[in-house]
Length: 267
Image 1: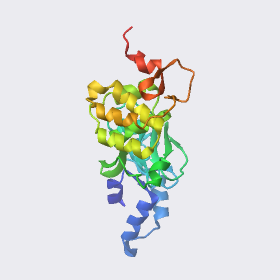
Image 2: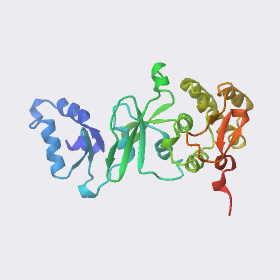
Image 3: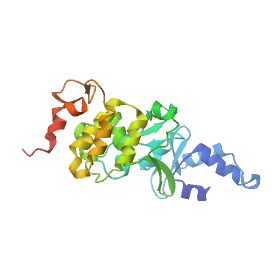
Image 4: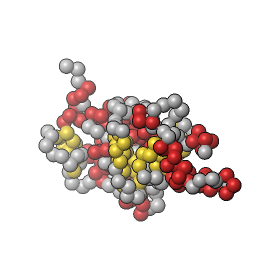
């Protein structure tokens, strides 16, 4: 089992059992379940949640070891895709480090809390499922020898606008996204179209217009997004207790703190 543990810093019980079964009966003196229980007991493994384990590096106390949170999030569900603020953190684009990690999934796992970290499942947008486009804007990366799926920066931009509650305050979202120097605008607009949400189109368009010089956004992309905007004014966020102004070009009520980027003002 040592070879498996060396190449699987985090693994599911299914992955372990497939490896165990592949070794042949002659080498299987114990069942997979009993082996896992033994290695947890002696401190070689951590049982993160039912069916999910992390390997404890040699010489480290099991009770003090914290596994890589990106790998944990990527194994919380068989179809997990790191998304929203977690995707920004993975790419080194997040303004702040969060202890909450989000991943998109078509399944229905429960949120998990482990050693001060929380892992929040987010439902894959129904619009993508209807079009069989769940994999649009998803890339596979390697981390510590293991593969994990993460939304691209383009899809992440749109997802952050589509479901803003998973990425912190507006200051956090803006400061994080502003570290990205380039977006593939064709991919951004195509993903907005796949979602089919007029308010999301307006939010994305507003962000790109506000940053058109830095991101070198051609007018044609803004015009295309304007065609997808709501016909009546919509709010950028559901909470309406903040002073907001109507941005007519996008039919969007936007909090003044975002329009003025008050957090960036020097006192």
